[in-house]
Image 1 (cartoon, protein in one colour):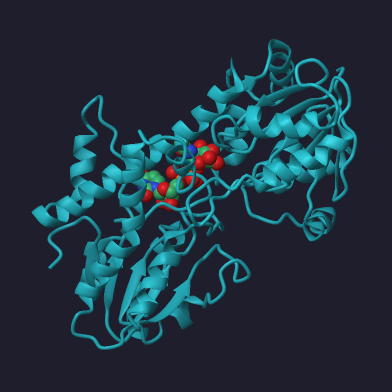
Image 2 (image 1 turned 180 degrees about the vertical axis):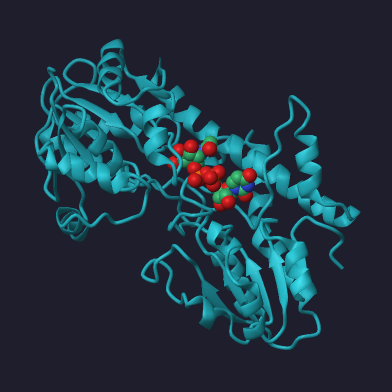
Length: 422
Ligand code: SAJ
């Protein structure tokens, strides 16, 4: 193995599992993160977030002594950049972490090194931003060092499985970059690996998440139309999906997470032609407001109601609340003067201040709003919960709970996208 030492910059949701997979597959890996508190916790074997199977893998990598973590940069044969790329308030890609990672690498760059960008970025970031910074080292891309883009494709909640089994796209600046990057990822990827250029790879990643965003927007639009017509969208989608070429996604309270709610903006920023993409983003962003208007209809006779948010994670059974639509729902409800109590089975108080125990959150409540369909919300004692509430209203934004059972207990149940909401 010629290039043996790999430095992974950014030990987050993708960097840490990727570093550990490489370390358990024969590479000597140094994980670097500018957050020294994170480094200290990993060293103490405290993993900063929950992901099934990750802890075991990180421990295995550390036990093998092939994975070391530190805050300082180091020389290496290969550098992998896995830092976040959020959006600015003006919905433009914030590439500052990629820029500073590149600036950290430049002084350490040596002849024959390979730099791999994993972070999701705007088209042409490799050629127009990354390479010019790295070239400041005095080395020339293609001639002295190699460069490629290998966007991650794994879904939070199933990251370990998907990192290994999904197909991957590698965009390289030349044949050698593609070849060496493929060799490195082949050490743990069981899926197929496809090769292209860097700008195509950057755009493919954005297209994937935009495809999903647009399809969720369509489901959300169908849900609103169903409420006008007076049909159950959940039943209608199930039946429409019996068509061999139809696969409608699910409506809900909005799109959260650090990818789908963000990445489409990286395309709209670049093109006036991005019309459906922009509209889909807008539709998905209207969903928290729609949830509040459904709740308002349920609560119309109640002055200064108290409502309970069940679930703030952006999706089920994860502890991740980034970009969660729950934030917007809570902000809108507060603006109406409602008293809000918040509960989540997985998200930690340190990540989402204001969380209460389930008992505290439902006490004296006029309405439960189920925002996140955590499995555990299926199994709680709704009889007991009803006895703690002031009024027994429940708004299910995911069509997740058993409405018939809840109605039998005495709840007034509304489901997003189901029946006319007057
Ligand atoms: N959602 C719906 N309806 C649906 C599906 C999802 O409202 O039918 C909502 C979810 O509740 C959530 C949001 O969309 O709030 C996004 O969740 P997700 O599970 O669809 O996706 P992410 O953001 O966790 O991960 C996505 C994945 N991309 C695709 O499926 C195309 C993953 O493969 C990417 O690696 C990841 O983005 C990323 O990091 O880019």
